[in-house]
Length: 602
Image (cartoon, rainbow, N blue to C red; front, side, top):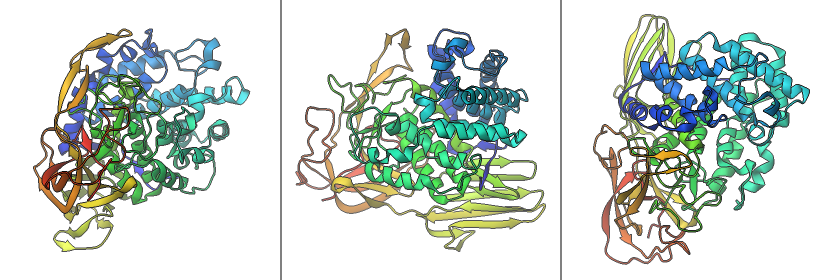
């Protein structure tokens, strides 16, 4: 089941600010992890003695498309070195993960699902003809062991059973063998059914569970979309039903759900794990591809332009494990952390705060977003995400020049050899839409090009800043795909140290962010004036944001959460103004590393 199909890294290339973002990523932690981090550099996947489970496949899942999108020969060669080592260690029966034969029964086969998916990504990028046979043998072995009862799904493999379908669908398209459908059914039958867990989502507890784990949930949203075809089941848009429950009970202003590490309710001082942002984005990419429904692309842009950059440093050398909507400081908790199930360093910017899964996994988010810019179905091409990119295939050459989401003008240059239909998705918030100077109310533009035609399309629309209702009588400010926050100036405290043999050393050390400006504000007028600065070399710069909004505020006695002096109260202690109105410049949420995003309007 697919309304749209993805292009490959040979066909799509990032442009403009998106290319600069990927270049920053390549120069930062993602592009250097194999040089500095023992769990990648010395992984059991390549014959070393460090982690031999999820971290290398996680890292390769983003590093590979990043390397090919940027056409970086050094990175491509380094990716191949890892792939060659992994392929060389595959057993004759198809087993590929680094564990002894007698350990397979206790080895969590989430890693089997993940490496099969990662190898699929590698083939789509490289065209390496060794890979389909390798994946075929991995899945055939997986089927044989699950079918015989030699192994069963448990823990992470049970919670993430649907992740195997990226590879299953790929191989089935090539061979059409029935055992793949049997494997699909076994995985679903042994896997978690998240529909049975929704009652637990409505009243989150300080208890760690697989079925309330935020990363599992982020992944799970695409499960029906990727599996229903192989299972011969009707698509029911179950993701929308679950999305509604999650938003009502755990939603945030930027479209992610709280989860530090499990679902955490509606408090603006509960966090969200970075892995969940990356995986929820990936789910939305597949949901849009499967359904063609604009809501998934619009939700994807919200995550990509807000939650993703907010939790990674400008140079992309450090990241948080948990981000908070109202985050007035990122300092170690000396005692009990505010988080439900995470440690006291989870919100620091560092190499692997709290846990290293996000260190390996976050780097898939930007490259896979770039690969979702254009999609196709037969002789129809759609610009799914309004991000600067270039599509070049044997038939069509399409260039999109734009600074969206910071500006709302778009120049398309389309040239085709054979006839196509070209579509452009228009966001639901767009106002005063014009196409080549003519006003229209369409929410999806469509152009029929004849063979040999070259066409320039100029699109523009307005986005109006507005106050959005949040729980507890609070408000957030949104303009188009961007959410805005009161930024808090801060000082950085650098922490260089070694723990468990892992060195934190500049630029991949840890940082505390210590506030040095006021944050106890309430909105006090309807003033929301957009100020555009232009996009800098760092697109989501924390010091030179591309767009700001002038707002009127007054100080209030906000207060702190009981027992803390670095966490603001969930709800202000008082909404009475403490002085005259001031003007503040709101930053995009993704640019404000310390911020107040949900505040009262008085």
